[in-house]
Image (cartoon, rainbow, N blue to C red):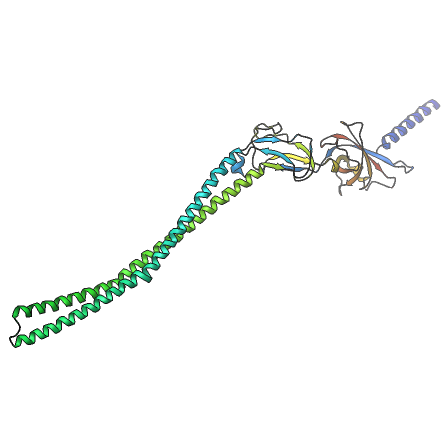
Length: 366
């Protein structure tokens, strides 16, 4: 019986020691000493995406000419990728010729409008007034001629009553009166036609010519503006063929090319509008994402210190502080640890283990 009691005590002691060892890495013991919680995780970074900003109509025929070396640290404004802009430059040259042709068309249409406006003014203020004056003078002369012919006829008829005028002369005087009346009627008709028809017809024609010239000018301006805008778009597209860094960071290739999935971008690859070509990250602002269980996460507080060791860099010891903790822990939760002694050797995706120091006063929240 005593021997059985000894075995039971030994087993109980073994269980207690094992429990203490298991608790050592995750919780504080009864003495209140600080302990550590260990967790596996991955390095993460704040990414800056570098995209192709060419519009679709230009990007579809564009390929990569040069690309910066992966892992290189670049500053804001540095060229990361140069796209082949030769076809855009050729198109720009053709567009410049179209713009020049549009400028010639503008000069012609402005000239045509000016000529039509002058022609209208010339008729209304010159030709019409001259013709009207001539027609009115013709009416006056016709009236005078009729009056003279009538007086001559009266004199002839008076002399005829006295047998002093031959019959053929009298007939001639009467014909002269009839002819003078006809001339007066024709002169009055010419004046009336000029005022009521010719003027209106010419005014309508000249007004129409002015209106058409104005429309032609507006169309020429619109076409020229359109060609100018296309030229500006081409210039902007050529500038966007030099893709620059918006901030300082380390270059990271996207592991996919549009025509060759699964491979990184290379010179000669085609690009798409809006395609993410590269990503930049700053190794000085990286974080470690650690996965914890619900019970472990309840013991973590923001500001707690941590030590991180990476599988790929075993000689490097990183220090950090817990940056944020989920408010409502679930079965598995991610905790972000901000690295306080960053190194240029770091890169996103490296795996490792974080040891979070838990203060003695930290207790699990029920």
